[in-house]
Image (cartoon, rainbow, N blue to C red; front, side, top):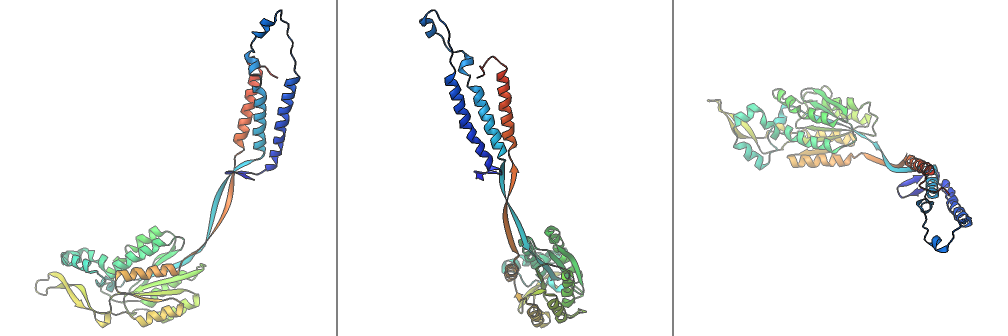
Amino acid sequence: MDIGSLHFQNPEAFWLLVLVPVLIALYVYREHRRKSTIKFPALSIAKRAVPSRRVRFRHIVPVLRLLALCCFIVALARPQNAMEVEYTSTDGVDIMLALDVSGSMGTLDMLTRAEQAKLGVMNAERILKSGDYWKYSRMGYAQIVIADFIQKRHSDRIGLSAFGSRAVTQCPLTLDYGSLLEILGVTDELARDSIVAGRTAIGDGLMNALARLEKSDAKSRVVVLLTDGKDNASVISPVRAAEVAQSLGVKVYTVGVGKKKGKILAFQQNPWTGEISWGERDITPEEGIDEATLSAIAQKTGGKFYRAENKEQLEEIYSEIDQLEKTEIETVAYARYAEKFYPWLLVGALLILLELVLANTRFVRIP
């Protein structure tokens, strides 16, 4: 039984309230039957008599008794405060982010015109030595977009695998997104260290990510692999790694970044003075992405291949993957009750105490 925000566990106790009108009727009946006689030598003297305070307040004690009885009846009904609680269960998605950290990820080919103009007026040598140009590189944009992707997830475990000339696990599957974002923020250091090697192990990078998902019991297991090159350093070929992913039931989304053709902003050095300045160079065929292999990996595992030539396209890709791999959330609402009969007992006890105090004074006449 609910009354307002209160839930009563034993509502049948309210039947005892029937006693209240019965007790009131008995009290009124007794008052009418009670007769008092007093002798006065003259009627005029009796007319001037006024009731004392004891007589005027004689009804206080029975009222206190009835109020105390009502409080005890309400307490017996066990009033409880109902609080709605929501229990959320999720069928989570485990996601491994496989990120290419080869030296070519430092290429400046995804700039907007405004960003290119901004860099063009800055000191090239200083930018090169400080490494500030990395924030405008393929790696810099990938870090920003992937960080946004991570922050949009709420109940999924996410891990990070990095691959260049070899593959390493940067962060195992975790719900600690804060730590994951910190680790993601320094992956460009791996790319800087591998700038000379110029080798990319896509197959090994995928296998490293699959090793982290092999024992996962999540309803859905996904690898999002981002690269800007061709596989030329793997022990296990990308196609073979895709077959392993297929056997494990892991879906692989492949993302290729970088322009297909045209010119890119680059550093150039004066052979006579050694001075570093800004320049442009053509994208060579050797720098292209192996779209056929990346498409085959995605197709074999039930994923999808994407191509991004700028930051906006990369944002759209990860946004689409975020929508495709949404976690199913089931919410069950139930009520939890907190006992609230103690105040009623306390008030009833205080009323009884007040009645006892009045009963032992001459202030009120006890009926």
